[in-house]
Length: 607
Image (cartoon, rainbow, N blue to C red; front, side, top):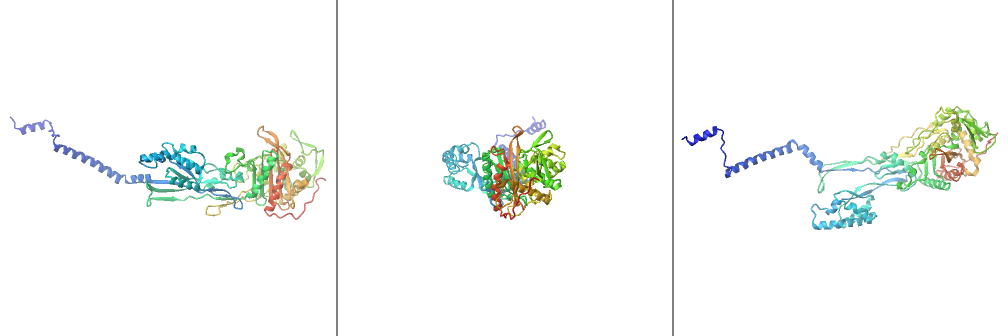
């Protein structure tokens, strides 16, 4: 029988493995040590990855989770009038924010039963305090205060910061939590409806939505800043990483508008529109020498603080957006063009029949007459359509259109107000019958600001100044960044300007006290045109107007009044004339314009 070790050797050669007796304590310890060694090796490898191989990436992720970033809003620039009176400014305001989750657990990470009992009654208590300071009823706030699984609810917008501070103190005294604030500056218009069609308004997000607030939005808004800092559950880390990009506040705009005169003009215009039962009216005042807009009134209008309460059609600015046939005010430009071209003379005789054929139509004058003879001056003063056509036919028709183009018709003035219309001017290849209508104020459309700037050119010795409404622009730190104005350009000669002004003087003189201003010589022209009704795309109703400059011997101020579709009063003289007269009486002494020292004498209107 083989020895035991021989048998063992045989078993090993046969592929048998000797099993350890795992039930023994030494074996169990040995297994545990192997498992622990394996686990420690895994942990060491992970530590090496975190601390060495991925250290930079993990540190960045940790910093990101600790970093708080918030925008710093820029302050919107102010808009003021010519004397510095504020028309639009931004005041400090906040949105009131609720955190329903915080309210529900009384601001505790691990609320006690006492905390939860207090939290149940908190929404009603908070709502009562909100009503006390913000108005409204409890029901306005309770749904937001009790909204489940929510950390952010806007409870009220653009509340004055002082009101919020007082409310916050009462909430703190009552140990009520979960109400916060966020910056939400409020745009305010202290003069309400005064110049609202010029200034405009901002929407609920603080962006310009109308007027200059819209067209100058980017410049007024400025550039927001940004703050980033490391934060902890206990607040900002004092020595943590912090970066700050300061906001750049918006630019401030001073207008050429005299807001006090603007208010008076708006009142007088509203009186006329209501009294004549018209659709709308507008009145423009220009500095003849510079083209600066002194006032630009509209009625109906709106309050910039509450544009939502106005009709949509009243939110624009008809002084730049309304396009209409100007009627006989246009004759001012036609005669100025003919004088400059040398095709007429004020003293030449014109035989005027009862009507004149133009294309397939017969054109007559508003004043019915037989065959009469006027001087060219009389044609203008009597506002004869027939006489104007006969004189205009002596001038190449393309030349007349070119003059009107140079006066700025058929193109935007570049005033900078949104919604400005271009109007319409026929091409230089217009038919003869269109030239006839064009000469006396039909077959084209203009805006009030276009027509005012064009007639101001006649009054300014023949030099065109693009109308402007911005007096100066400054940065928040007071640096002047006012853009350069467009260069003046000559349209007609000084001689043609003088001859046209003389006709306009005679026109006012012929009407007597109805258009005259005490102590001042005035040069002007009435306008009464058929109104195009968009409802039927036909002529229905009238557009009445009056344009004048004073003093006539050295024009300083231009006033243009347009009243559309009056039910009472059928002419520019009857409807717009009295409004112009009252406005001019206010404006001349207000701007220190010296009275006339010469007296206008009547000149012959007929041979």
